[in-house]
Each structure stands twice: as C-alpha cells, then as structure tokens.
Image 1 (cartoon, rainbow, N blue to C red):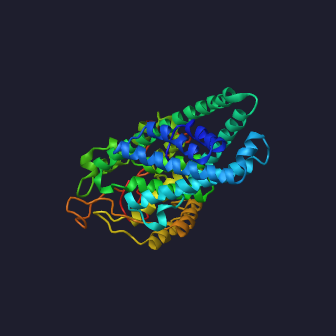
Image 2 (cartoon, rainbow, N blue to C red):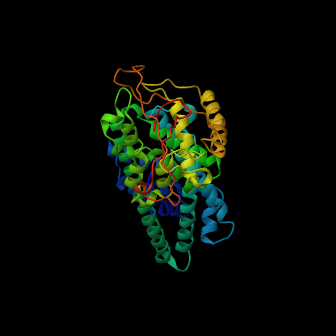
Image 3 (cartoon, rainbow, N blue to C red):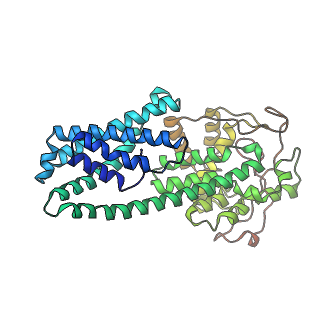
Amino acid sequence: MYADTGTFYPVLLAGVFLLPAPAAALVAVPGALLDRVEQRPRWARRVWRAAGLALAAWAAARAHAALGGRQAVAAADFPYVLLPAQAAVLAFCVVLTLLDGTILLAAERLPVRTAWRGLFARSLGPVAVHGLAGLMMAVLWRSTYGPLAALLVLLPMHISSWVFAQYHRERAAHQATIRALVRAVDIKDGYTRGHSERVGHASQLIARELGMDDERVEMLRFAGILHDVGKLGVPTRLLRKDGKLTPEERRIIELHPEYGHEMVRGIGFLGEARAAVLHHHERLDGTGYPYGLAGLRIPESARVVAVADAFDAMTSTRSYSRARPVEVALAELRRCSGSHFDPRMVHALIRALERHGWRPAVTADGPDGPGGARRNVPAARPAAAAPNGNAPHQLTPRPAQFTTPSGERTP
C-alpha cells in the first residue's frame, strides 16, 4: 500500500464520497507527497505514490457517483449508502493492485504469474475499514452537526493508528533481535549457515498443519530459528574442528541447548520458544538430552522443532554430508517415529510438504570448499531426567550415546 498513516485513508475516502472525481483525486496529492519515504530515490517514490493514489481516488469517486452515492450520503440513506461505498472501495483496491503489480513487474523483475499475487486480498481489508470511517465522516459532514463532528472521527482513528504503529515497531524490534542472534550463530558456525531459517520455516509448516493459531505458529517459527543459538557459548575451535572430538569436547558441545536457554530466557516475547531451545534434542523414548525427558513430558514446541531440525539436516548439502532426497528423509523420520520423534509432528510435516513442497539448499562451504573433507561432529549424550525442568547443574549425566536419524554425529 502507498500511505501508512491511519488518518490519511479515511480523509481520502471521505473525499471520494463527498467530492466529484477530479477533486477527490486532488485530495490524495498533499498527503502522499508529504508522507515519509525510507528508500531512495525519495521524491520519485513520492510522485509515484501521489499519482497512484490520485488515480485510485478518481476511479473510486466515479464508481461511487455512478451508483448515486453522493445523493445517498447527503440524505444519510442507510443502508443503501453502503452499496456505493463498497463499490468505491473495490474500485480503489483494484486500481492500487494493478499499479502495485505493474511496478513489481517492471522494477523488481518479478514473474508475471506472481507480480499481482495476493495484493488485492491484502489491501481490501484495511481499505474497507478505512472506508467505513471515511463514510462516517462524509455522512456527518453533510449532517446538521457539520464539519466539526466529522473531524472528531479522526481522533479515535489517530489513536488506533498510533497503537498499531507501536505494535509494528515492537514487532520489528523482535525480528531484529532474532536476526542478530541468528547472524551471530551463522558467523560462528559457517558449516550450518542458513540452517536456522529453514528449521524455522519447517517448524512453521508443522504448526500450521496441526491447526495452531497464528500467534503459536509465529512462536514456533521463532523456536526453529533460535534452536541452535546456544552454539554462541561453545568454543569456535570445537564447532570448526576437523577430526574426532574427545569425550570432554562432546560434553561441551552438548551444553549448547542449556547455553541457548540461558541466553533467551529473559526475552519475554519468545514464550514457549524458550522451551524448544532447551529441549529440542530430547527423544521420545527418554534417551535424549539435556534432561532425558520422555513422551509428553517433552514440550510440544520442542517436539515440533526436533522433527524440523532433523529433516533439514538430512535434506541439506553441507561440506561434510550429502543431501538426502526428501522422500528418503521422510522415510527415515517415519522409521524413527515413536522412538525418537513424535508421530504427530512427523505426519504433520509429511502432509505439509505434500501441499507446499520443499527446497533444500547448500548451507555452507567447508574449509576445503563444496564437497571437501567430511567434518567429524560429536555424538550426543543424554543426561538424567529433570522432573520439573530444574536447572542443568542439578542433574547427573548418563553415559549413553545418540545418533541422529540423518546419520550425522551431531549434538
């Protein structure tokens, strides 16, 4: 969409409902030219924005007038006044969609089949809400209460817009925090670069397939992205070591879930994602780590991320292992379902991939380049169970070994 301010669209659409088409088009120009633009060239973008909104307002005003909307507004003819207003909103969104898709096609070089995809649906809801506010302004303007009453409509709109902007700023700050942490992990352990984002995407697919609400789906995406953040607490020489690791070095690397949990436990917005960071190496049969939890004692978020993590490990080409085909990886997940993985999560991933597909990718080049010497990574060791999620130092390790279904000896 072109303008971001919450009070701009109601005023613009009120003009559409009150004025002839040429005058309604002029209403769009000042606000669009004065609106803040982040990307360069700023003035070229402002002119394009003003022209697009003016054209959309002109088309909307023509559609509104053709259905007798101006007379209905003047007479406050409810509910008929809603019909021309709806036609105006649809015309407004259609024009903006055509213009947005055209600029994406020409400037961003998007394919024709994707340039306009989803633009109309995303614009219709917000514009319809602003259209109702604009219609209220127009009716009050023509009523006995006059322009002052119409302008009072802007106050709650401005407050709601401010709250909405604050929410988006906070959300942007959350995203920036997560990106910074993931970037740090990628820099430290270049062998798995890109792995975190793909695990986040796979976790999101599983969560959606399980019918979780949007908030939990987003939280599971965060969990997948941050599941290996504890590697920041592991010495770099161990993460990049070529050759066999000693038992002591394996124990150090196996601490990364606990390090990660300590790093994110104070980030309130992560919610249940913090439990996934701590428990994503637990196994359903109780032989995982760090606490050796079994069955439903393993948090649901961790069971989701465990499947997503193993799937991406198997389907990603790295310097020390070749990617397996998706079908082979899914067969391995099925084989380990019930002992290592939660069958619900495995079946949800399979259904999601049947619907959406998967694009495996090379995560990083090793020290010898693509296809270089295989890197030996440690086998994981489960620890004693923590009945109430107690701190790690209260637990006693158990001398068992664990190998991932992908065949990788990883923590």
